[in-house]
Image 1 (cartoon, helix red, strand yellow):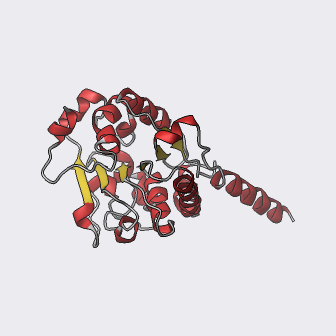
Image 2: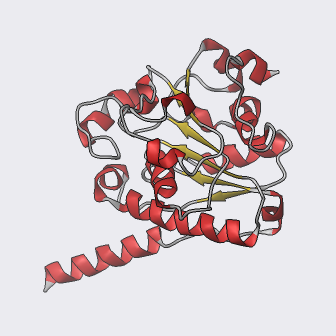
Image 3: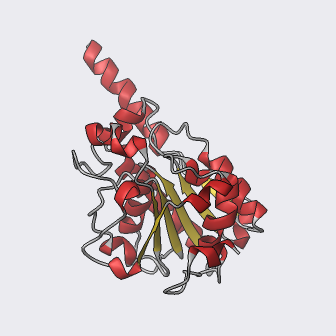
Length: 255
């Protein structure tokens, strides 16, 4: 009986957290960027992403996707609720596209939240698409196949990675990648090398120039507002569907 009680509490917690879909506010008429936080949901990255995009002149809504269990990062990494969160986000994106046809839709994911972002894309119904996807400190396996997800992306997947990310180099390898691979590198550490669709995956390695904008290569630095304004916003705002043209440099992005 006691065990059944714990199972009931656990199930209720999971339903509550994975069922929290963002609502659409007045800014949604100008477009929307969904932000998928990392495991544990304590990074406050949504603040940096929102402030950075607004400072860059973004007029759309930044909507946080609450998918975590509330039981800690290690549990979230193994629980499977990230896949449920991705399914929930897919339905939310479809609702947005139906309500606001033709508006730009983008996704930014951090750490385990990159799994939520990719699985949302994989679960989107036909004729529902997003423009661009930005992955920060991704704990997806570096060989994860994003070919299916890219079918629902107009532009590209931008994967920012840092070889000195200590979270991906240590704890993640113990708990496994968000897609369940143990002892292997995450895409946020060595780049995303998908067997399919690699021509539409842009890997951007951390470089010292990022320090000027608060990104020192640590796990959550990619969500700092100055960095979001200077770099991430370009993927969200450049031509609305605006993927960076082949050969365009980060220096060009920063201008």
